Amino acid sequence: ATGLPQLAASVYAALPAPAGPAALIMCDPFPAEEAATSTIFRCKFPGCLRSYGSTDAARKHARKTHPDWLKLADAAAAKRVRGGPSTKSSFYCAREEAPLLSPSSAVP
Image (cartoon, rainbow, N blue to C red; front, side):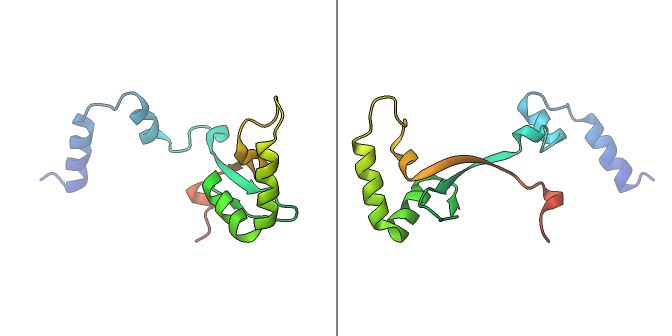
């Protein structure tokens, strides 16, 4: 009699190998160390250490926590000179790359 593990192995072996991006995902979820980063947006208010996953979240934080400063940042954005920052969000948050934690380095 064929055992279940042997049967599963034979069924898996009969499946076609994945091609394209799916093959990379199935082989290694973290294929390159340099690709294991995430973009975060850090609040630019002096002394504030908060960071968020989107500019919208960073703006909401600034609106609720630093309202007077955000008004000044908005005024500066409205008067920006040619060749200055390309987006209004650059006046209230800084885009940064942060390393992702691999599953093995996650805290239990």
